[in-house]
Length: 383
Image 1 (cartoon, one colour):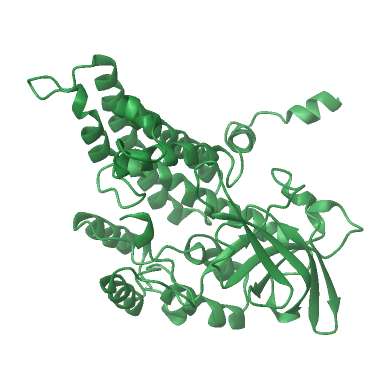
Image 2 (image 1 turned 180 degrees about the vertical axis):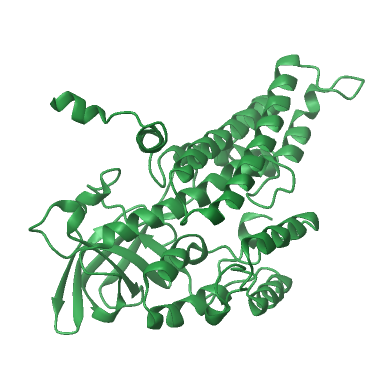
């Protein structure tokens, strides 16, 4: 799977290959883009055990993901948990079929790790909310059809208590986006601006001023999704733009001796250790999925997986750079293959893994408090 062949769906969906469109339509018809979601809303209605078997069989035949969607990985699970029937009936089937592409309106210029300090305002006027403010690092906002957005609906209460969770169309009057060019040369993130955007009050999900509850749960789903970056090095790789095992083997060709083995013992050891760690992480992630059927959705495990998965993903690009040696210095022009140029750019992009979805420090704090039971350092200092 190369980047421009990933299927995101949406009102303006593009399919580089006609087979991709057919694959999406057939998977969606069975509800298998969201295999465990209720059949009532277009999902597959499978048990978690059946879904595991389905995913294993798809991996066995090296099938591509039929649909990549923030609606699937983030919004859908919380909408099923907190949305009313009308909201589920309106949005869930479209997510399953890939008819609407979603983006996330969380971070703001002054509210990143301290997300609860957000200031985008939503004021009720009749049966509509009027939204003003801005978001930043909004992934693919310039290509999205709808946004799930955190807004402040009460400025007179503690910051966590005055936030609401709302959905609206990106084609609404007053919505504008501006792509942000990254050091890697790509622009997947945007600045997003809201100027007197009118949103039906019926689009509010859950209770007024209780959006922080939904926001935290969605972040857990997002972190679980991001942890999948670390799975690209395991067998049955179905994500990313490069298969790590194949790329490492190919990249290290100039290190091979007459016997076909990598002659650099340090590099050989690092590649072997990476493969072992990748397989262990894949098995741990699978165990987490199987154990989650006894839990009520994601928990602090999502922070553990997110932290380790992102560190593993950064390691694989460091290894790829080492494996291709001086060819990793290319940015454009002759003398470098497309794969080598892509590795250099994706190495730069991988550094953001430690920030997106909650920084590495945030994840470690969650693990310290909720898993290890360590005391809150701020409370100790105050004493």
